[in-house]
Amino acid sequence: MLIPIGTNVENKRYPTITYCLIGLNLLIFALQWSIQRSGDLDAQNGVTRWIGHVLSEGALSSQDFHVYSLFSYQFLHAGWMHIVGNMIFLLPFGKAVEDRMGHVGFALFYLGCGAFAGGMHALTSASPVIGASGSVCAVTAAFIVLAPKTTIKVVLIFFIIGVYQIPSLLLVAFFVLFDLFSLLASTVGTNTDPTAWIAHLSGYLCGFAITFLLLKLSVIASSQFDLTEMLKQASRRRSYKRIVEGSSQKNVLQPAKVEPALILRAQISEDVAAGKHFEAAQTYIREREKFPDMRITSQLHATLANALLQHGKVKEGVSLYEEYLSIFTDADDRSEVALLLAAKYTRELHNETRALALLNEYSSSFSQKHKSLAATLLHELSHDTIS
Image (tube, rainbow, N blue to C red; front, side):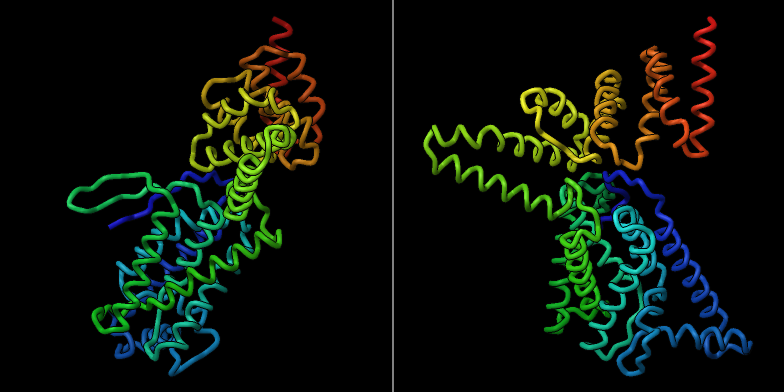
């Protein structure tokens, strides 16, 4: 058994919708469980019977179809193992996908893909279906589109119990193939498990296709680490290889001034996607003088600078963040970066002049929660000046 417990993706947004979905699913299942133990539809209490009837009507069935059941079935589960399994998968993948799609976008994506998965099951089977599996499978597929080169931390329970890091693509491919083979086995009659395999596979397909389309249409902002960018990088490498193999030495020199920078940028992006943030930062610091025209995204730039700071390379990290302020003049987090720099200059680099300049320049753009830190830094700076 493989149980995912986390990814190496750094999230910026608090996963409000993911936590709400998990909480709502658990709450409704607790209601299901208590109603069943109280007699369900055969209970003597009228309220209990009414709630049991409402819950039973929430299942999705082609024999008794209601439009609302395309959504209500996603919050009903058949047992503890059913709901725990779904929520365990929703937690790590949902946080990463919600971070990229936004709260409202993720909620619509989750419910819409779940409705599609349930609808495909209803079209192909007369059996009623309940559970969030189709929605969760869609979220899992979306994660692979948005972060294909990441790793997933899993608990492996097989004779012995251990925690391992597994490539995301490998883990998701395993579960997709498992569902596909289970469907084939069910079709030929060798698998009697009542699981709705069509809903699972439809969820994967819907989640993958919609997320890829949203990236291509720029509805979701692309990053250096998603599937579309990975395909672009692979195309660049193939093009460069063809140029090298099919050109004379003289012709190779012309594109070499530009193409190596693209390859280096792709390598740095791949290292970050694989969780090698510090190694990528070291490569960038070492090679950037050779390629002064190389440009990376603001997200990647900040990731490299932060990795240097976390590994004690304060001067190098501060230098990269100073570049960040000068290059990305429209970035939303410039005031946060300026405050971070002011703290480093005040407490570690002892450059009071630059710290004061940053605090004064960005004082009007600090958020309320950051103003207290700015005031503390100003107090420290004034104390140092008096001393």
